Amino acid sequence: MKPHIFALFALFVCVSASAAYVDGTVGYLQDSEDMMYSGRLGTEMFTSGVLSHNAEIEVGFIDESEGVVDVSVIPLMANYRLESPIVGDFFFSGGAGAGVASIDVEYPGIDENKTTFVMQVFAGVGYTLSPELQLMLSARYFWVDDITIRNNRVEVGDDVAVEAGARFRF
Image 1 (cartoon, rainbow, N blue to C red):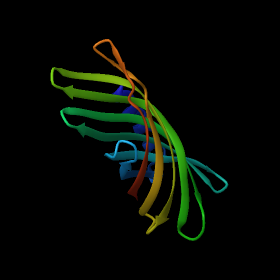
Image 2 (spheres, rainbow, N blue to C red):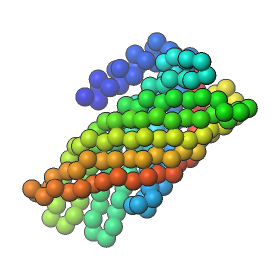
Image 3 (cartoon, rainbow, N blue to C red):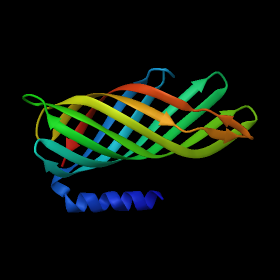
C-alpha cells in the first residue's frame, strides 16, 4: 500500500513541482503527555480565490512509555489542507486526514504489532519568512481506532496536540 501512496504523491509533485513543499512539526499530546513528531510532503493542487487547496502525505511517530509498557504509533495519512492569507505575511491553515497506523505494543510476555485506522483534523496559523520558508503553530485532534491484543479489545483513543513546525517550499 505504501508504494501506491508514494506513487500518487509523486504524480502530484510532477504535475505541480513549483508548488511542492516539505514540512515537519513537533507536538505535545495533552492527554498522554508525550511528544508527537510528523513530517509531510505536499503540493498545492489549485487555488480558488484566496484559498489554496493542498494534498499531503504525512508520516508521524509517537512513543508512549509508562513503566514496563511501551507503545509506538507510526501513522501514515493522506491529508487535505486549505490555506488562506490573514494579514501581511500571516496565514491560516486547516484540514483533515485519514490513513493507517502501525502500533507496536511491548509488555512483559507481549510483543505485538497491529495496524488500524487513524484520522485527524488540524488548524493553525503560520508566518511566511520568505517565499521558501514558513513557520507554523497549530493544534491537532488525533484519533486512533481500537486494536485487539490476545483477544482483548484495547481502546487506543484520541488526543489533542499543540505543535510548532517549519515548511520549506521548492
